[in-house]
Amino acid sequence: MIRKRPTAGRPAFLHVAALASVVMIAAAAPPSTTARAADEFPYERMLLLDVAPMPPLKRVPILTVEPNGSATIELWCRTAKARVQVSENAIRIEIAPLSEALPQYMGAGQCSDARVQADAETLQALAEVTQWRRRGDGVELAGPATAVTMRFRASSH
View (cartoon, rainbow, N blue to C red):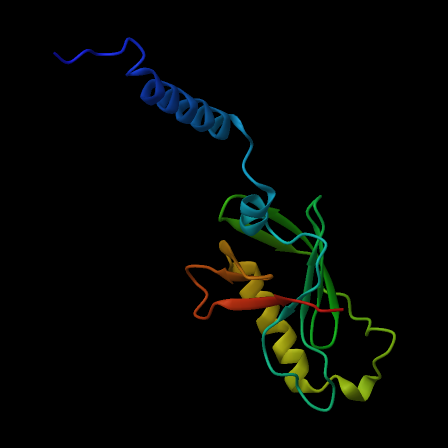
C-alpha cells in the first residue's frame, strides 16, 4: 500500500509561491537606470556632428541641449541659439535668428563662402528634423523632409 505524506505537495507549492513573489517585486520595482539612460536624450552633452572638418579648421558643428530646452548650435562659422522640445522619439528644434558676429577665436578670413553655405544648410536640416533616437553615446536626428540622417556623437572632452 502506498501512503502519501500530507506534506508531499508543499515543496512545489512553496517554490511556486516564492517565484510569484519575486516576479511581483520585480514588476513593482522602477525600471533600471541603465535601461532608462539608453532611451533618454543626452542633455548637457556636447554632441558633435559626425562629419569631416572643413580645412583649415578642425571645427565641426556641435549641438548642446539643456534639460530646460535651451540649446546652443555651434556651426561651421557662427553660433546659433535654439529651443528644443524632446519627447519619446519626437524632436522639434526652433532656431533663433543667426547672429552676424563671428566666434571670438575666428577671424574674418576663416569663414569662407563654403562655410557660410554649410552653416545655412546645417540650420535648415536641423529645423526640419522631427525624430530622434539614441545611438550609443550620441543621437541620430531625422525628418520627413530631411534626405540624410544627421548623426551626432558625444564629445570625449
